[in-house]
Length: 190
Length: 229
View 1 (cartoon, rainbow over the protein chains, first blue to last red):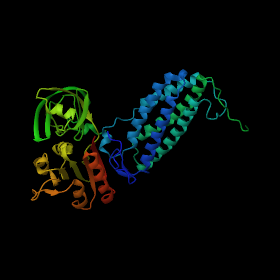
View 2: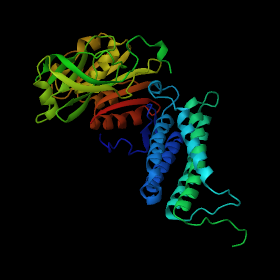
View 3: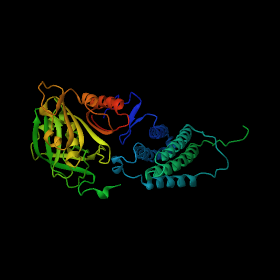
């Protein structure tokens, strides 16, 4: 597969479904943020401490899920290719919810806001959380393209991303706990 | 999903396994059509690809036959030194081949605007499949070196609203239905202003050049691309 074709040198590119659009098209903005999120997860996964190595496959599954979501973001509702894409399975979101419950059950109750940080791995998890929230906002904007009939896949994508940012918040706390690093509570006056 | 409305046998369904070569027919000195036995499990849409594996090599080929036909036809250019194509060209009928499919999303949208099929060389294969599956009223620009390499011409010309063979190495007088130059020349000079859906299949250089013309002349058009690797 050739990576560089030069066909986008004039600021236009093709969506997965065929439309030629400017590279700042809303769908590409959303797909780009999703791509950024996936890259941050790659950094997070590569830097997992040994004590959390078992989380790597779980993060790999999330990355694969994001690819599936990306395909849906990069097409129009009327594309014939949409008929070949598997619908976004709500079971993916269900998997996240189980992971959230698992981590929540193993963590001390949260009594104050936390400053993002602690260990480096937790820092990456917090960054993933914030990029995830931005991606979610961009995907929500895609509802405006066909407000009367947003595809079910977009709804499921938003549901997934909403859970995913919660997952990363809990993952940050979990990573700090596994590394024995204290969480940093927010105080009004430092 | 609108799969319930598809004809039986056309629903994409995954297949991975082995099949057999039924026949091999040279259409030009370096281009042959390979017909394979169609695995019962394989359902595909016109425009999709079949992946073949031979002795460690793996290549995708657009399916030239329609889902309604019994066999699977592939149009293959023999590259000098190309391990896969040489192997396939030398394989006798009855040879067993490993493969999988269908692959790809290069599909025809019958509900779209006037379709313009743009093919270079063996890139005509998916358009033969689309035409054999009922696509009609399309403009077809097929680029080839000579008229002898305008594969499936009679079949496609009968179904096209307009057929233009774009010949890069033919000498005048050119046969009817052809013009000198590349498909990009035809896009630039022969296609009237209008609303179109473009479908491009061929080498990535052709697709890049065609997109330049389409972006300049038809900025609102949809463009579906299937580049050869």
